[in-house]
Length: 243
Image (cartoon, rainbow, N blue to C red; front, side, top):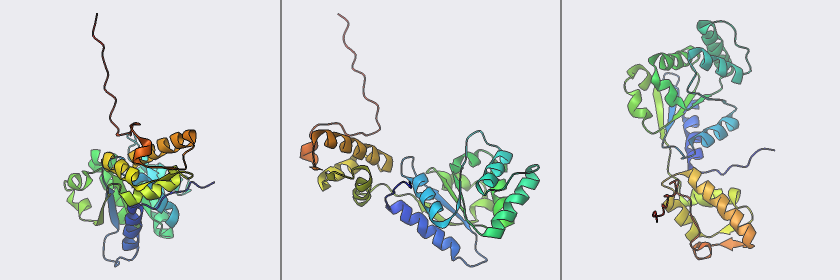
């Protein structure tokens, strides 16, 4: 059964960027970057859009080198990897060029550790002219300036947005499906989330659990009372005094 997703603003922004890339003039570059702090829902938004447009989604791992990245992309495309790096690159470019589908590379920060990894991604683009969306942390635009040949090929930059009250209301229908979360409590969750979609989701799941136990049909800030709200901070240790 497919997991239900809330259409929050970051998902809309990614879909708009995909539309911009798809409609671009043939002489314009086809790279896009989605960037922002951890917890902003970038991966979820990118994966959801990948499913909508039948794109290839690959989440890069810290231990991967060039060959591993090419092999994982080919496996995602349903192609059996064969040969060394040059042959794998040719396979990747030929497949993307033939089907015209988008490639999404999550955790793209790992590619910034090495100029050779970035050059490989540029080679994939140049050899296929495919749309490529790269997803990573907040400093990617600044870090990419070191590699002008790559930076200049980015057509659209997508800054992930902090969670909004409207986002929180949509997320509540997923994480609190049988409990109405009132506006003042949603506002409090957003105010304490420091922009993080993930923290709002954690709090909504907690509210749902408590509400079911208490038999609440709706919950506002007064009803929630002094119960804790997750902020991501570790609790402070209380050390007793030695007697």
